[in-house]
Length: 133
Image (cartoon, rainbow, N blue to C red; front, side, top):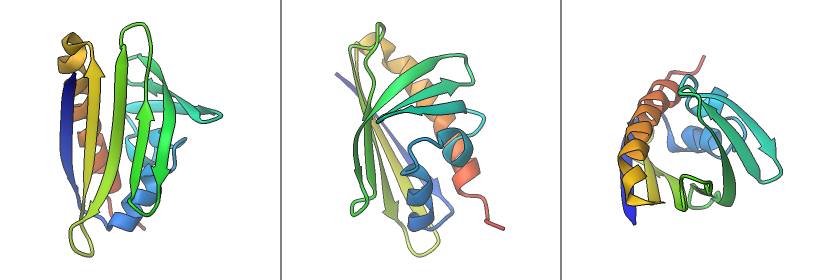
């Protein structure tokens, strides 16, 4: 199984970043607008539309406020195994890290997933690191 990890520095307090990340249905407005164009909830599944035209169903696996960790999974015709987690780690009072880890099969899809995660990471830095009015 391919395992891809992005360690994303964010210029914002961990609590504020966690508040956005844990909002499972608001990825398109609070976490990665532009990269994600729409998110709709269907129970504990979010239907995510990406800027590249792809649409996926992400099943919520866990949302742990104490650990600031969110886990979701995808299963479709192209991906036989996909689980991903976001964990928010403080780095002082005004900075934090978003640790985004994805485990995926088949191996052949890993380069595509890694490229999409890089685009998502850039969108997160631009959105989550913005000063609040």
